[in-house]
Length: 372
Image (cartoon, rainbow, N blue to C red; front, side, top):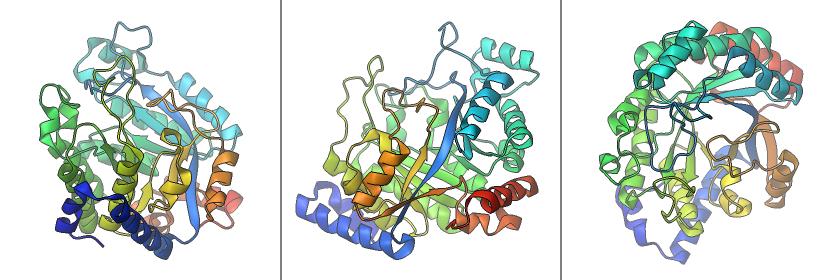
């Protein structure tokens, strides 16, 4: 395991040092996760693409006035979910812009038409609808949450998530990635991690690399996640996601992190984080499957046979058979998992509402006789 000082000093690591790090990270992963690399078969439901934040790299968000700005209706939600269910999906990833009703009267009006005053209230109702009318598990990615929000969403979700991205306040300055983004204030995002820990919510978070952060800020972000996990034990997975430049954004000409930078970051993440935390890298944002596995990851995250990655629509999901081949080619077995990891599923009284625990048991009994 790396000390803080050792991690900081790796900023200018050469190729030999990076290779040694990757070997250490891979060995640690093997010790705790064996020869299995997991994924979740999901559908991606973008409940709304309106958001009060304007991140410099984002194409997901649409402002009112754009013909693409929307809040999905219950019928639209269930159409996607039922099609995914027919394809064997078990996870419904609800992803949405943050608190658009606090900025846009159009969002407030649309929510009122649907019978709700906040996006969290509407999200809660959509999760409950999924539970009542399908066999699937909601996973909620709603950004920063108040304690009231966490309490509302916990009974209707198997797990929740929010990318920390980075702990640097410097990235909120003018010209930086998080300028004019009230929900990207690091203390607010860290508070969400704390609150979900306090209420025993299995949680996914992660860092976004290459958005203007320094190496030390990147390391500090991983350390902050690990420190919160040490207090609460609820971080089930951490994503290391590489920035991809997109036309039409403020960061369209921003340089992307290179492969060595990504491999170094993955290895350092594995060696900083508690080894029980799953380490994930999105399979649609890269083409270096074997290198990623040999840098310490043990999970590919959610992969959909139906819906696109609405955050990175230009990057198609790999076919699950192709992902299985790429994983086996590296000497590992691809295995499907649920939106909640076994160590949390096995303590339902602590981590799951009764209706979620019942749903998990039902899925496992039908589909996962060898679930890990």
